[in-house]
Image 1 (cartoon, rainbow, N blue to C red):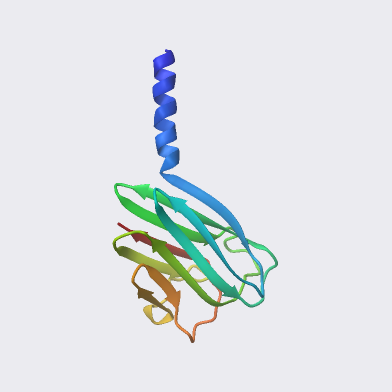
Image 2: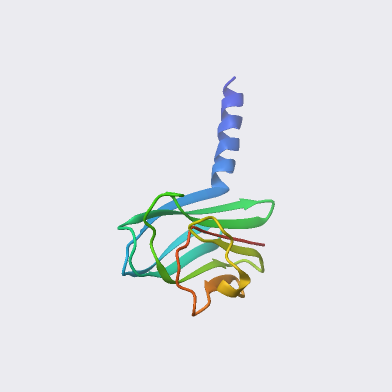
Length: 142
């Protein structure tokens, strides 16, 4: 019985090591960034906000599954009123050989068009003319 518990504890620690979560707050009128590390790789989100909700809660969730890293940056209060307005943002996966996907959604859940952001190397950022509300960014890479 004790072996079963030890094996179960080992399995749970391996599963827990595959996903890390970091909450952070976006404060209006402040340039800032949030980072999270996993297995020698880093997910980084930097932004410039200009108004909106005070201390809006967001999370970085970074996971590793079958040698693919996925970073999800998202606003916690989906569908609630009051959103931070962004002048700009940049999300990157540092240390991966290639970016496989990069997608971003606005506060209404609509996928941003390719004309709204640009992918360069292992990062995605808004185009200079973009300045809107953001709800989620997802990057994956190997």
